[in-house]
Length: 140
Image 1 (cartoon, rainbow, N blue to C red):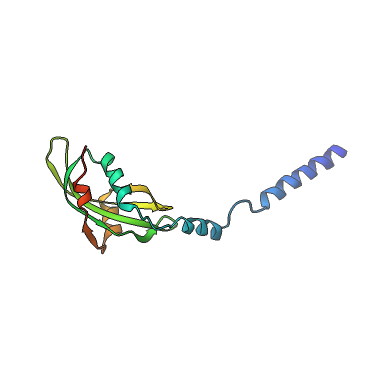
Image 2: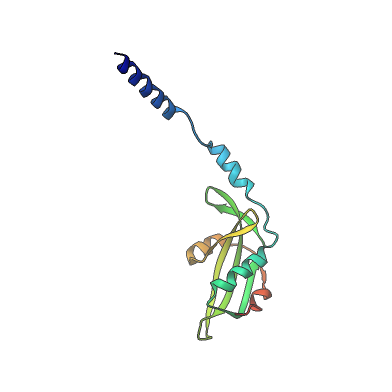
């Protein structure tokens, strides 16, 4: 009988542990997400460092344009996003045509680069671009 009572108490304790809310609330998760939205003051330098490795041939990129960082809906909230357009060369030195992309920033640093045309078009629609000559000055 004593074993049955102990087993029942352990089972009740285990079930009680499952019923408690462990972990952050949705409001806490949103607050954490939003706290990481720090303006990326060095966004151009971060983007240049990334592009040096992303592009097959980073030398003499032409028609380079970049936007200012702007908060846009991304994931469960908003993130700072920077849009970019450029015409880069392939390994044979031939220009491939203007491509676009956008970078998302977390805690002021480049987190991820997106280059899927449909996503880029949606994210960068109605964004103001400015010349980005620094991208054209990259070397291998």
